Image 1 (cartoon, rainbow, N blue to C red):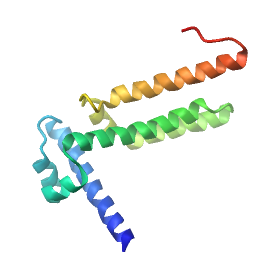
Image 2 (cartoon, rainbow, N blue to C red; image 1 turned 180 degrees about the vertical axis):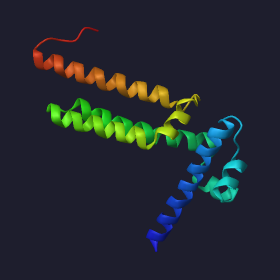
Image 3 (cartoon, rainbow, N blue to C red; image 1 turned 180 degrees about the horizontal axis):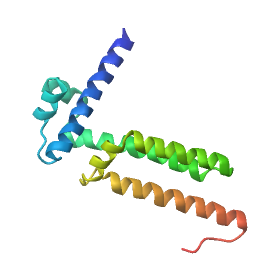
Length: 146
């Protein structure tokens, strides 16, 4: 029985997210409302609120999810010593970005105090490159310049 609930919940969230992205494309973040999302997703407002606090919460969760996926692929890339494996990781990164390209392009244009995909991606890249260079310099016997 628990599997059905999880499957139903996942389907509902998927519908809400699809509606969110459709409205984001057509109306922009500021203009879209919970009523719009609920109507397009085919769910009641109370169902929306049982999964998300508001549209900002939904945005935050989507940005966190895409940032996490991006970070995982980028970190794997910088941890690889084998050129062939590195090439495969780049392919995975491109596939992930291509799979979600429409959603990512929409989210890259939304900037709130708590959710900014562009900023999140930049932070991931900065941190990962810094860690990689620090480790590479340690292995060569000299310290990085601050």
